[in-house]
Length: 548
Image (cartoon, one colour):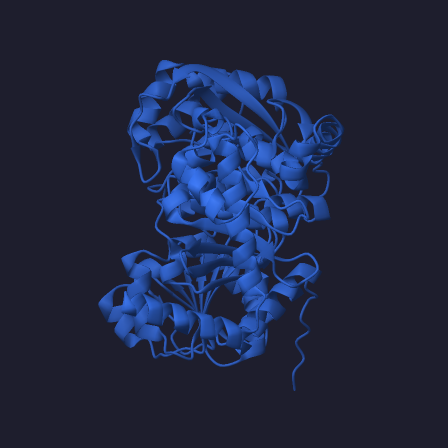
């Protein structure tokens, strides 16, 4: 007799489960689920496993993630047996096997695993492009296996797309929408400005080299400045500090201790038992500041943390969101989370900060929700002052101005476009759901869907991330000098061929906008044609191309 009672899921978690099931019905077998840290990715995919039945495998790469998953299965799917493959543990007969990627990737351990599985979940799926994950997935899946990736950051920071492994982002919510809905705590930000210039630093995989970054931070006396900022703005808060190197983590902890603030540092070489003891002291309030290098960005769950110290300036949105996500969980008595952003002079590099992503003032005087209200008020004022600007950007003026990308927008508010030149165009169009949007990358007559049925802010974020990975910032810079130059002969010819009205003295920027929106409207009109019409046109175009 089934005596297990499953705890209730939240509305968005149930919506995510339904979206996964619907995608399965459409034949999508490699799916991506994107939910912010602290909103219950684990219990969501456990519910998917429970409903689907059959054997399931969950892949994780950290001890904390493995323990969280086992606890979630026991709570949300208590009638299923759960086993662990990690180190000496080899529980291969359980209905749900939670496996360490490092352990399972060993040929001898993988050979003992009796596959295939009905469901395979890849936790922190932005790592799934690594060879170890691919080897495991090849060994344990068939064409009928559901491979579900779960992540808070659905795009890798090293610019390697996950599209090779996952066919579709089937459900996605971002931090901002979850804060607005009350599921995550509010954020406020303070910038710790250093006398440091990051423009001379080299980058690898889209971010600063850790060793060089450490040297620049140390030369700017960053530990002292960080401790001063904490004492001034965050005294009494429980802080997690993220650093570029192990040495800098320990140096920062010593700087806090010298000033009478209880602090510890951990790294990848910290013994498991000692790491757990440190985390326990932090949870109990014995330690006020816990510094780490690349250890607590994933899988760490401590709702009492109400301060995040980003002591490693970064250009990676993925890494930045992972770091601040450690402080967004809600708990009793916690009103908000303060982010201390360590920054310096940099014109060549765009640093990720709460100001850059969410438009927060750098002095901690407002939270995200207050900033959003301010942005809305500013947008309303801009509407009255400049009708043309309102038509183009008011649909989401707060986020567009923060990101500083040049969006084209249809006046009806049903089409948003990033024109990438020879790399095609990114179209954000309604999905058919009342508040859902799709993101499509169109090149010539072909197009690929990057996101499906997400909210408008998330859709624009997906498009902007893709555009930056294509190195298209110059084309999309709203302050670029070329925008005010006279339109080229090629542009004028294209406008004439499309029979578009051309104002006298039209600039390159205005011509680009006219043409970009014109072709985007034509693409959208084609998408609305019946399927048989689209197929007939495609066949005709292929025959014409072959004849040429």
